[in-house]
Length: 207
Image (cartoon, rainbow, N blue to C red; front, side):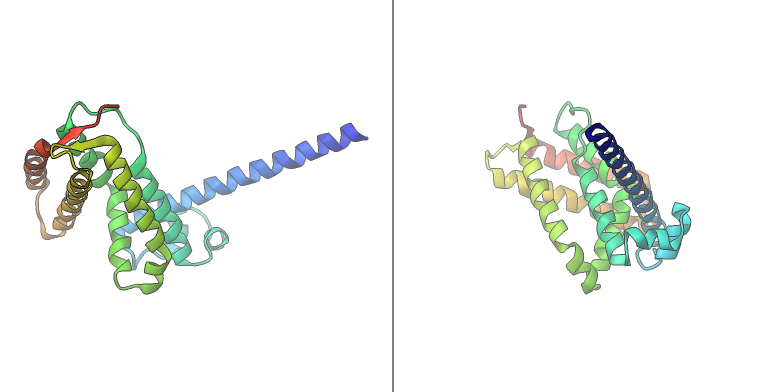
């Protein structure tokens, strides 16, 4: 009898685990579809209906996981912010590291989607309240990552944080310039010049 109960308990746990995995996959597909729509049509046009169509699920399926648009966007922002901490191959020097930051994390569909959310949150107070804590925590973690990866030629940690925040702000500005018809070639020239200016002020931290 005891063996039978153990088998039954193991079966239940396996079913729960499978259901959790299925739910996680569904949430992942929905959030990834949201990212694509944000980058393509903007925040206002990224509706629950459109997300459902892009994800290939029903509107009810989306709302099962995310009852409202703010819930969906908050989860999507989590995914977008986490990707900035993915590790890649170790860069050879500061210049390569900054260029990698631009190519792998900023000049991407995902970062364009994040910008759409950030722009919307400026005037959408409900959205702002929903994601502000995430953004503050992300900024703090980004500063910690900067200090783990770089030192400043001045020897000051504050300079590392300032220079990396300035670099990210500059990169965001380059993306925004796209809507005014600035070519990719010109953008890359600006990026190269920025790296030329900032590179000598930083050093890769020895791991």
